[in-house]
Length: 217
Image 1 (cartoon, rainbow, N blue to C red):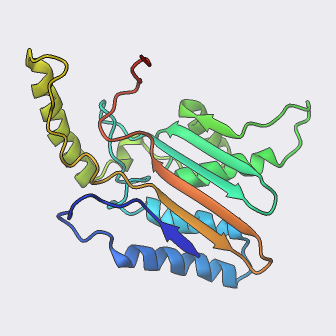
Image 2 (image 1 turned 90 degrees about the horizontal axis):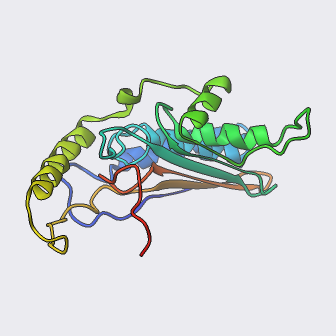
Image 3 (image 1 turned 45 degrees about the vertical axis):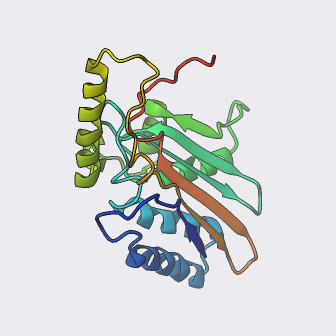
């Protein structure tokens, strides 16, 4: 079982990474593998533990968008078959990795009309699909942690102050700290049948980006 997340650029005011988080994730996944679970299930179980920890930028505790909401991405692949499933920009799904696994499993079923199942679902459609597949959904605000709200308040104040100035567009705004909490959590598992699976979960975009991207120049 292998777990990973991105590096932080400076020392944080709390104990990160908390070794108990990784221990719990590994213990949960390894317990399943010992019971005979496949690698895909172990990956899902491990990442759910990571998504539920408020110190990581995935699931509960994710950085907020400029509008103060949580939007998440997650993806998973079964290495033994090449099957893939993912969700993007989804709100109100407690564990986005579970929704990604549901997309993967749905893709394995035969459609009565012969339609090709999607490999990725996004936004409200992803949440509606998750609900239909009995993936736990919650009010969107339930995924906002105290730390992410405090960070949002801090960056919102800085953004409002910068936008209120009449400085040229080329002015440089202090962006120290932008890279502090931008982890992408991931897991890789190998089961007793030598099948490999991998998954990843993260907040949908860098902290404090708006819901659109500027045009390419």
